[in-house]
Length: 417
Ligand code: NAP
Image (cartoon, rainbow, N blue to C red; front, side, top):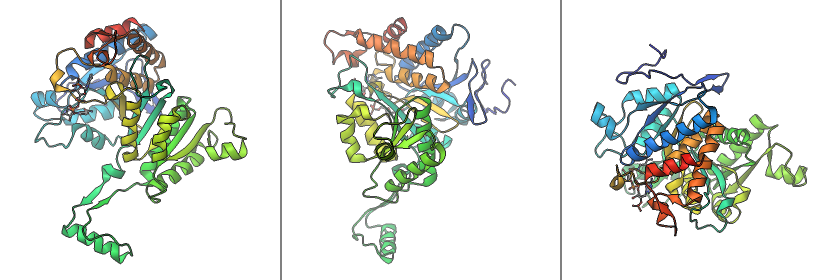
């Protein structure tokens, strides 16, 4: 057996490559990491091979033969159904836990299957508590913002609490009545004909998310982390998110961070060299800020619901979700993904835009610490889009653009690295 402790039921273990390990809490990436990947349903067959080719070319260009990604296919969705009779074989979870970094195409939720959503199943099973979405603009992409080039933010959205752990009782049910009577005993009046919803936000959940966001800002030399909340209304959930976030920043990163208030009161408005500014904004104000003053924001950390709206609004502000990359991660495992769906009507036509998955691959390369390769892919994407060599979705919005296939777009990216 090549990989000690890798217990697979149905998959054959990878025949080459090495495992990413953690030593003293730090990730150590070999030169030939095994990368488990899920091709994905629908247009997965089109975009996933293109993403792999583009990343391979970038890695080769950046490091010669010294480094390479060892792709290892794991299964979920229809392909898993066809091969193993289940939408996600247990081995897929095992593989991600063991190899720690993976990437996936979009997945259809099988109707009548055991899972609410396969994406949610991955998140829950692996406790991937942060949904990470970088948002930036590419020159040549039509965008509603006047200065989309000012948008360069990374959203860290909490993935396990708040609305995602929401508990509800329908109006008129015995349970709703019980809760209403209980609340009355607690001195709180709620109308009899109310539905009841509860959203928990914990200190544990908040701290691990904010910690990850601050670490990211430090590692990637981002100037600020903004805690986005509705603490003016809900003090002990939304407000606590902010309070616990500030406390954690002070306790664990006190010498590396400074609050916005401290910048004003102690440093005459000038951020001390090398420090990340911690600030907070109320969610509705933040929606204005991303439109009016985006250049003042770099990393955003927020509870689930705020993050849901904000990620999509930000992506729309720079030209839509089609190019938005994403990842779900915890401190041990990171699973990168295209943020769009399976677009079944285009499946197998070599037509759609592989940009979202390619950029998720960039995020993955950055996560591995392979920055040179990540930069090459970005340069290739910038070049192709700037030159107007784009897939149908961008071509239809842009006069004079040359519409190419999914794979030809990948080639255009490679040629411009
Ligand atoms: P969708 O697959 O994202 O497709 C909606 C439309 O978005 C497409 O018809 C197409 O627009 C455009 N589009 C999506 N991906 C594109 C790409 N790569 N390049 C160019 N255009 C693209 O959303 P949906 O139709 O609502 O969902 C279909 C299935 O995907 C569902 O089963 C859903 O559950 C699943 N889904 C999965 C994920 C995931 O795995 N992360 C996320 C969302 C949805 P035009 O028709 O205008 O060309």
